[in-house]
Amino acid sequence: MPYSSNTSGSRLIKRLRRLRSSPNMRELVREYEVKLSDLIYPIFIEENITNPVPITSLPGLVRIPEAQLGAEIEALNALGIRYVMPFGISHHKDNCGSDTWNSKGLLARMISTIKTVCPNMMVIPDICFCEYTTHGHCGVLKQQSIDNDATVENLVKQCINAARAGADMLAPSAMMDGQVMAIRQGLDKEGFSHVAILAHAAKFASSFYGPFRDAVACELKGDRHTYQLDYANSRQALHEAMLDEQEGADILMIKPGTPYLDILSTLRSNTLLPLAAYQVSGEYAVIKCAANIGVLNERATVLETLTGFKRAGADLIVTYYAKQFAQWQLNE
Ligand code: PBG
Image 1 (tube, rainbow, N blue to C red):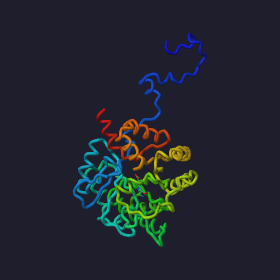
Image 2 (cartoon, rainbow, N blue to C red):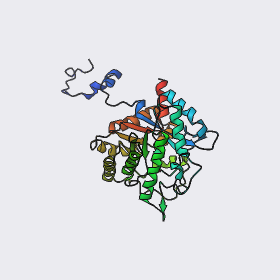
Image 3 (spheres, rainbow, N blue to C red):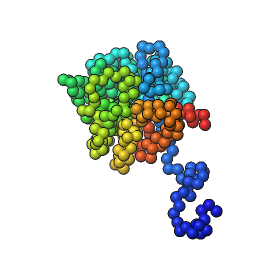
Image 4 (cartoon, rainbow, N blue to C red):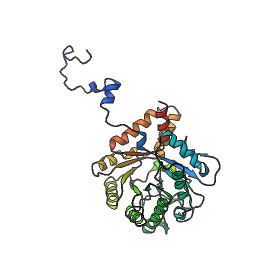
């Protein structure tokens, strides 16, 4: 009689542990569950290389040679992954990132390769310039500062190029004012009203992007504090997100993930749009490195963080762990 109160003399009526008493019981009342179809997998593709290059700061991840992209997509498809976010490592950088709106450039080639090999794979490219500019900033520099409106014009050209190449959804991450509205109008005018926008609605200037910049060989001098959000500000983050909704975003994303669950949760009660969380490179690296030295159980920790995003209000999650998640599921 494990719950008898009379014999022990206890008068407790509410015993929350009743619902935790067995795996079956816990599963019955579980509120959130992470599925593979919640996850978007970011991949790094480099032009003009022959062998995969391990990314030192992201153990387990590589820069995929462009010539091997098709094979990798087939492997991901076989694992059940349905959404990828390609990032290019460009050998054709200039001062404004013009390769991104070149119909024969790396961005267009990556997208059309993926769609040709696997039409069912949804392609959601990051839309930005920092991987394609010599100075490493996310747009056009004028007198050492970013020219917002000139950058927005270029973002529209990049988006139309990506849509022509077959992108299903676009994820603008430059944090320029008015970018979502301009992109929506530009896409619609060119006949791409069916292409969705996953807005980096609130992207904070974060130390957690460190490994990513190593991954894409971004040579940033200075920082991004004039365009990315100050991490001390939550009202401004909500304001950014609500503006993106008004400008026509289809999904609102918060980035990074773990340190910003409060933003996600508040935003959840302020919009009807689907929400996304981006578990960024530094978050991956923290778990991976701790697991590699034996101080964290990797799989359990990853599941806990991903479930945390869903509990806080995310419908979908961008994570470098998507492939491993798929493999873990397969080996169950
Ligand atoms: C480009 C971009 C960045 C990330 C995604 N897109 C870097 C940055 O803004 O500095 C970071 C992603 C990650 O760390 O995983 N603007």
